[in-house]
Image 1 (tube, rainbow, N blue to C red):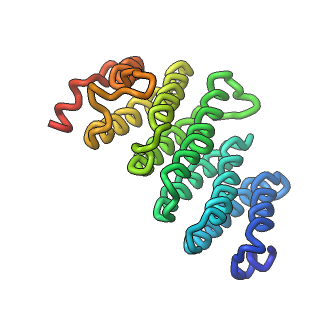
Image 2: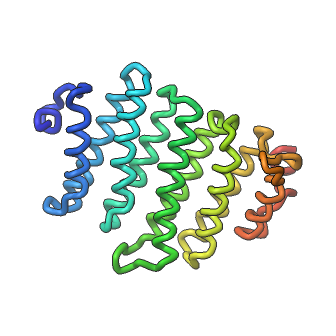
Image 3: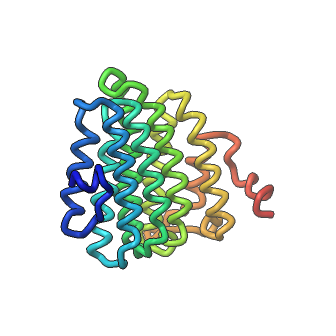
Length: 245
């Protein structure tokens, strides 16, 4: 493991899991200060860049998810600088890995269990006003909301045909609703723009339209605009004409 950290030795399947465990220990360790944790996260990105080149398989997906979860765990670190860097790193890992050829179902799992779960945890901390335990958490939550928007839009071609896509969209809207209830200036600036971008792309792709319903016959067009208006009065169906004609 030391050879990999110090001398850049080759990362192999047999040393990958111990390496990820070591990276996580360095990230979470406070003895070396924030600088050690940040360097460990950079090492995590290096690991992912190497693993991405391996032949696609379910086993590879499992290794990749373990690496993703190391970054996810760091997003709730008590230190703001580490936490914020982890959110940026998680976004970079997710967006740079879309070419790995994961299935739609696998990307759906990542969206639910990593992206949405991370943002929900961070925003819940803001809502509960845990400033003493997690200082400047609203800034971290803002970074995470932007990550959510970018990841959702990048994964959209893989997500749109899933049976659970409507559930993912409704959960996403619920998390943004939670953001709106936080009385946070950071979130009140980030959420409307993020939601607008997602709505515009979904409308342009023909996903969001007046007849869009889920398996329970819930009209998702109506639900989307109800939630959107509660975020900002500027988010209403008429805005689509300007962008989609």
